[in-house]
Image (cartoon, rainbow, N blue to C red; front, top):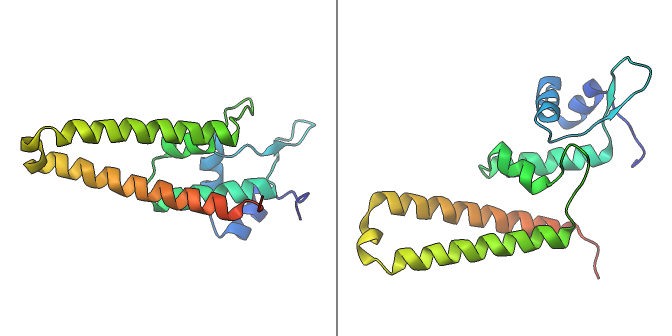
Length: 145
């Protein structure tokens, strides 16, 4: 059913979401439906949009912000996207930056006792765990090499 196109109502019903939610994702640049010609302004959603909404909902459940989700989807308004290798390289660089920050904190034993540092460390751990979960999902969905 990869060639299927859905109106916003059909798409929302299929996903169990409200049309307002789909419209919100579209306005936020998370979805890029096809626009019908002739000026009537109808938008049509595809199976690719369905997959994107599934990923959006997974990331939201893991407490990622809309900005972080947009970056994860890595698509701009012109439809340019980074290759999967570039996205993974960005993840590696971010993990290296996080590791360096952790090493800096570890070098100052006094900071480890502060509640604010503990809270930031817990949030970083939650995000890293969520990122790992998303990466596992992506790898699982990829065809075997």
